[in-house]
Length: 405
Image 1: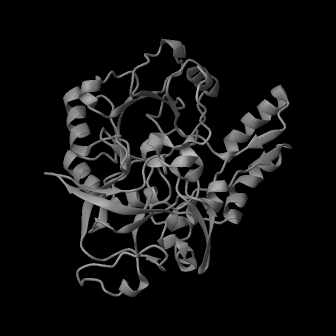
Image 2 (image 1 turned 180 degrees about the vertical axis):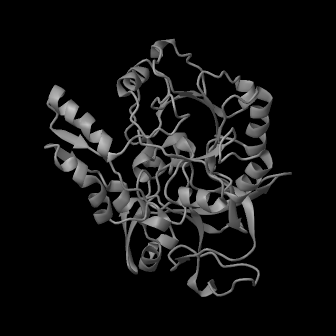
Image 3 (image 1 turned 30 degrees about the horizontal axis):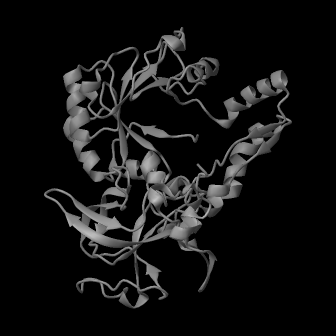
């Protein structure tokens, strides 16, 4: 389980894009009484300026169901967040999740909370003088009990190295724990993965601009001081930070399908090869792989996709773009890599690189739908070597044994 982040109170496209670049999972639009409140027209304009796959949460208070329904439909909200014990019927929220914010001095027994599909409870620290955003740590014992009885829970705000340290100190005293894992901690650049592959990009985009673009030293300086006095061995797991953007999944467009309102590029990779988009709608940048000799031919009616074994480059094409779904060949509605993604015009035979596949990529791959696993290659500069062979049909059945009855 990983921490997911919602940045609330977005009012400008540049703030939303900065939050997404920094690794935010959700963008919060305040649609109730607040200095940052958005009207429906303002919210629609802002939504159109953001990536189509951005997951937007609408924050409401006591708005009637018909208002909630209109916003949910017009903005294609991922979730509807309501305050207190307001009951929003699922038909008002449509396909959006419902997040109920629990903010009270005395919380009920979690087992009494209705267990409803698509319903999540948001626990926030209580302050009778503030409607939200207290910055204080919520009741974690209650949160633990909530999870134990199977309720979906989000813990809102108040989590930083300063107030986590007392909890660790308490656990150490009560249970004699010897290790404290802070997980990965450092994110990677998903939405601008290709650009961030150069040293110049990192020099031009410091922490203030890129959010998660910081060095190991920056990270250590932020977390070591409050943890130093705990007297406990602290573990960090920076695997994704080290290898996430070091890997790509190469796939070729096999078919282009045009329906009345949608266009699809059906590629030969599937959800079994990279399951993150299907599993939790993660974003992976997708760029064309083209011959270096064609990089200067912008605006001349196309590009030449490389054949096997040819040298290639990755490029952001400046040719005409279009919205398209990048989907796999598995007969599953979740078999996709991108939905309504702005891409340069794609053709059958084009080679694509799905970026940021170095972590949680091949290790989460499977033979689902009897699909052999792809080959793996190691690249260093202008050299490459195959380090894992492509599976064959024979590999899939080699370990099978006929029953003797």
